[in-house]
Image (cartoon, rainbow, N blue to C red):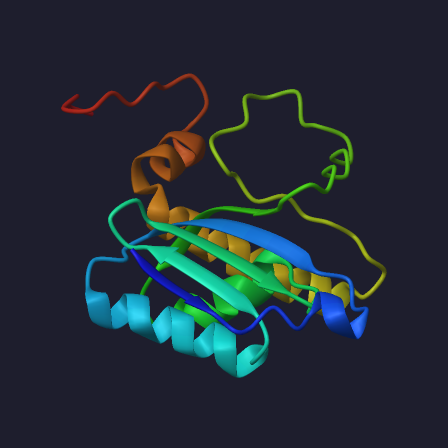
Length: 155
């Protein structure tokens, strides 16, 4: 596990510290581990970064506000996808109306912030990342109504 800490100066400056935790798919090399750490430090030199390559976990404490879209953008060039992104200790906002159909793991949701262009870009990026990480589930979702695709079934 790589653990690098920028001396804990955040609290000394009176800034609010945000603690983020990400589960990452596709982190297999120590080079990727070092690149993640480097990119996060470039964003905030006073942050604390903990990367556990074997578990696929990244923890980051920073004065910066981040969201999943920002983290996915950062990791895109490293060919990794985020399976889960959370701010530790912050109650997640309730989802806007949950669709009655079954929702699959980490399925993207469209969130209307009032900026249609940015909302569509964010949703398209989430959707593309989800489809890349869940091709079988996506196939099930897009199958014609009344059909059930099972692994190994013949259509």
